[in-house]
Length: 78
Image (tube, rainbow, N blue to C red; front, side, top):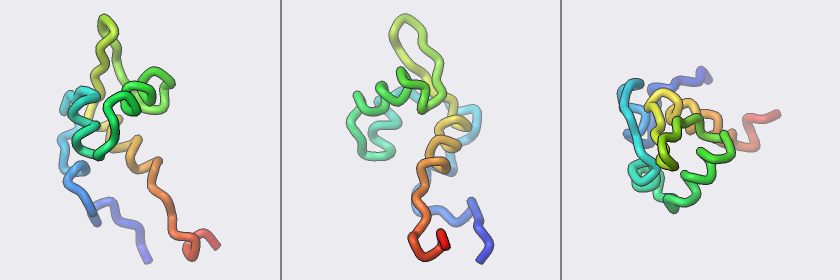
């Protein structure tokens, strides 16, 4: 079976690459606590820019972060 990024379960992959996101927006999109998103930014797991302690994330980086987080089903790992 061919992997296809166009097969989506969520509209997050419809975001334009140049979209600027804030941790609060990402938190709402993926239903995670905003402090988790900020921690990912601080730790470098989610590429971001920091200005005066505030983070912004570029849409392209967020989508790449989400693709890297994708868990493969155990039956396709063999």
